[in-house]
Length: 454
Image 1 (cartoon, rainbow, N blue to C red):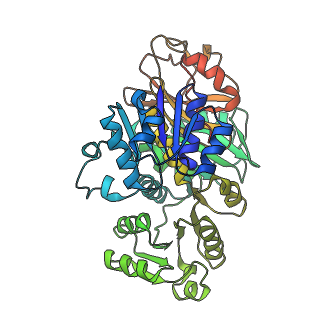
Image 2: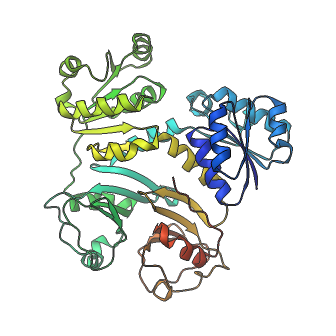
Image 3: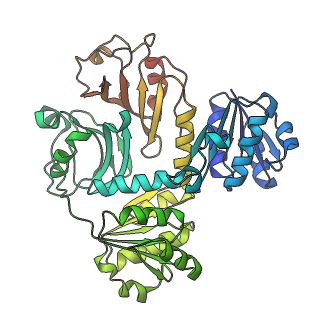
């Protein structure tokens, strides 16, 4: 497929790399000469330095022959204009990253389609949805959903004395009450393990579980997690994401407050929010931390656009008593640093945008992908009638040892991956895999590679 990308930031760069590796014919436009030169030197793509809003620049990038345009510059207005011009050049598919809720939220005046955008991706909306789902699952440090929300993937730290601690995977499978709570990955000492029947869960493990949504209440007691009420949340930054999150939290949390360094932004946020208390101050104002009783905060959420300020504010908030800290990191380079200093939850909006766009690009087998850690991911695949896996029992498959079938979804029902289950055409199969297993899984599902590494 011939694809034109407008914007060579982290998102555009990742997209160009992944799509070119898949064999797509990719062109990319950006006004930053150094970004374009770096991409041209490292990737097999056509890189054009120029303003993507200029028709002449689009023509130079080959827009007349493009099948898809993806606009991911830092400005919504530019992304909209690119999609408008792409429609005039009769490009069939037009995707845009749009940060403003005015273009994608409930109060939108025009739908994306009316603005010549086939698919609008708003990372802010996804961040808010992710945070709300984390709050719904006590102790979870990451969340994802499959099968239209019927199957949940939840990541937990395994505490001491939890009923699951010391149990082998085989023991857990034998407990009938846990047949739809499936542990699909274990992170131990920074290394991800695809669990085998003899593996024993240990205190300090970070585990990924697949669970039927209806069975989630049964999982929490097995982790010594209780549904404690979250009564106080402190948010750092009064940007649009924070304000819209605060509006949602006002309905479910007793005490929500925002710390905002800009006096003007603080006043604007206070005018827009009805129950949230907005404080003018920095994320390192220790006197303010004392004034707002940070020691009573159930969550500190650093959501500003400045990674360094987010990290520093979160470290200080935890030092002053906040129970858990959630940190936004725009630069993927910060992710290992944040994990190493004890932050509870990290969210990267740039990778969210990439993942969401790629999900909409995929055809055939893979309908969603969720990144676990380096070189490991969870995929949901639809079984094609002509694939190798169709019509075979799970026990008869030569399934790679560094991957596993986590669950099978059939006509809306989640099935545990029992060896006697026969995989059928139309089944949705959730697979957990290390990168070393990808080629073998490709052969089983009989499809072109659709696995992405961020």
